[in-house]
Amino acid sequence: MPLTLLLHAGGGDTTPWRDAFARHIPEAVVHDWPCDDVADYAAVWAPPRALFEGRAGLRAVFSLGAGVDHMLPVMEMLRGTRLLRIEDAGMADQMVEYALHGVLSHQRRMFTYAAQQRGRAWVRHPARSRASVTVGVLGLGVLGGAVARALAAFGYTVRGWSRRGAPLEGVAVYAGDAAFGDFLAGCEVLIDMLPLTPATENLLRRETLTRLPRGATLINLARGRHVVDDDLLALLDEGHLGAAVLDVFRGEPLAAEHPLWSHPRVVVTPHVAALSLPDGCAAQVAEKIRRIERGLPVTGEVDLDAGY
Ligand code: NDP
Ligand code: OXD
Image (cartoon, rainbow, N blue to C red; front, top):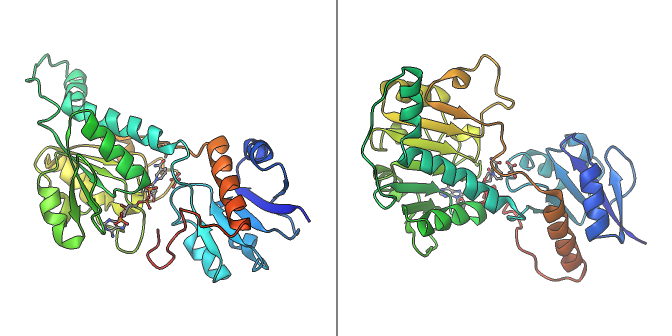
């Protein structure tokens, strides 16, 4: 019997995914959902609950992205089934580019010059070295770790915050809730690279964001539900925060009437910091399926209790 793979790309066109799976795992038969055929594996993004009805036979489920918050409620229907996520597969480079652009904009005062341009103000500010800018990265996993390492290699002073505090060369690592306040106190730029879990939801609110030095920039590349929007907007208006670069939002697409669209100190992008690339993702999923079939260990398995 050939291997069977159930595919759902968040309701979008599955053609690039089908082509990529055909290249990387030609021995598998790929079924687009909806369909009733039995499947050994599922590779999905934002699946509806109906997709997992009667699917207790799945050997593993793959999320076609790095974050799994969209998967956790539906995985409750498949107790005991393994959930795996994409690790990098071309996303880390994209995250590094986006983060670097945001940090350079802060260092080179592009947010200030954009505001000056609107007022036709010709005002020069002093130059700053990269090392004089301390950047904090929240979350030092596959993507956050890549961002922290790249910024440190480029010459910024980098600190990072993670749950367990595994060391990272060139980065001052702070571990756990007890160290969060000290971590924030020095960060002129804060980059959010955390997963969305009950512990990280609403983490970035007035009480925590006011720990950042005055004029700090927030760059959110992770999940909108980490941020309390009203607190963010108030801190921007009060000048405590100098700018926010936001790729992710509590509700996506961001509602047309949302004040973040038009705030002069906010940059909005439509959840594009790191796109899942079908070729790289299919290659990774194919390799993991082959390892599972041979009884070998695989990386990227989600701890369903921790939520990431
Ligand atoms: P990982 O699972 O590899 O890393 C998660 C990191 O967060 C780990 O360092 C972990 O700590 C840390 N962490 C988790 N919970 C806590 C907590 N309560 N307190 C402190 N640290 C915590 O994830 P990735 O790096 O692969 O991806 C990160 C996120 O990026 C995704 O979950 C997703 O939300 C977002 N993303 C956004 C995209 C976009 O286009 N905007 C695209 C892709 C991903 P520890 O190391 O100790 O376990
Ligand atoms: C992801 C995302 O988690 O695209 O991969 O946000």
